[in-house]
Amino acid sequence: MKTWIYLVLAIAAEVIATTALAKSESFTRLAPSAVAVVGYAAAFWFLSLPLRTMPTGIVYAIWSGLGIVLIALVAWVWSKQTLDFAAVVGLGLILSGVVVVNVFSDTVKH
Image 1 (cartoon, rainbow, N blue to C red):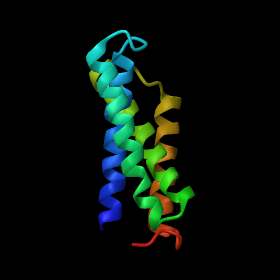
Image 2: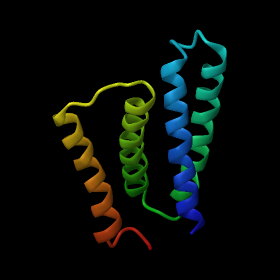
Image 3: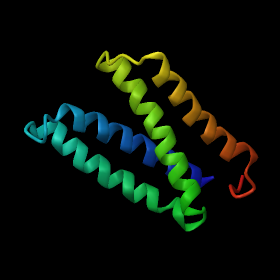
């Protein structure tokens, strides 16, 4: 169970860091820049922990897939960045892929 908690924390840290990076204006604003750097450091540290027990490809697929979808949602809600139909379908496919890997793959230990 700890493995999954670490993976969720890695995803959350990456989403926070990427959101801050967008607000940092190319690292010209101190606070969002600091949040981005610390967030990415935390994300990679937390990401390294599930790699002890889970296959790298699976960990990275879950981390990147959920990160992409969550960052798109945060940008939509906070920054009013619009998503067209194709973007929504694509994000849905990414999310579906993560679900398929987690539910049907024997590679993921439940």
